[in-house]
Image: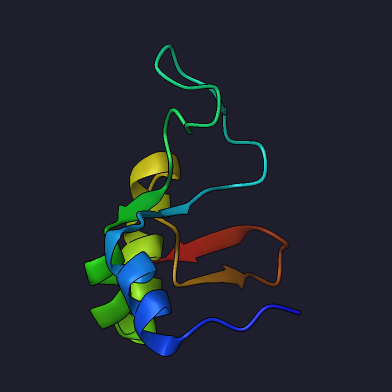
Length: 87
């Protein structure tokens, strides 16, 4: 097991980018086979260090809405079986 000094970890986090992807996102670009072509969200290490969980979830929700379209807040199933999407 490796233990790293807290300052070293802070330095690595501050320079490392953080990518949020979906399971089947395309990986590999002309520049690098390890790079994701269209990540849902990318944050700098500094942004990641400062963002609250609430704001992170909000930004991920916004990214998903841009990719797939706005999601309804609820879906109401009527007695006849039809659906009404509530936004």
